[in-house]
Length: 305
Image (cartoon, rainbow, N blue to C red; front, side, top):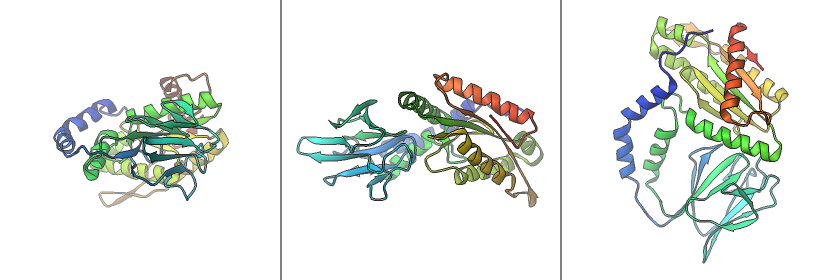
């Protein structure tokens, strides 16, 4: 098994946020209060995406005709609509397959209030009415506190929130999904022999390959020092096996240039098909980590289920 990473992810995140405290403070000051309304994706696909609401109704769904398009397969083509009348903003389900949830309760039609959460498929969108912001400042602020600054992927704590929600959704609707943890093989050796800059470059290239190889509806995060995690909603073992194996093979064929020399890297993957016996995200993560260890003990550059 590859040597343990030198510093736990939680500490690295803490260090990162500490060094960025000044930037966060400046960005927070740039947020100005106005009287407008917004929809912001807080969990799931396109996290951080933001849409200002006006007098024109907004339709959410998978269709290319939707104003707020989301490609998660659990979302209907025309899933729900948000609009404004003289009394305020409203949401209406459009006979979607998996229903529209307002604050985790199914609704047909309901009035929205500031801070409400609308859930469509595995995606959570927050409605806010009072806090319009400087868009550039808000985007940078959100990115700093939710995304890994090296790879641009979501941070672990954000991913774990989405995982808990996916477990609740899959339990409620009798669906399945796959959790996979991807570990860059022998990254510590690369760091020792070629330096941390080379190791960071490998991590960025692996993250890029993972993002390119997975589907848009799949959730991906920087999970640890050399680990990534992927959640594949509405996906069984056969489909997930093909997808993950394709990504693993693609990474093994990537050519990395370290100090002018061509090098290769590989990843080991532990994957688990969720079932109701995994009642919490922590239990599912523990089992997936066990499978990852089996993949590494089995010779690396492989998937263990």
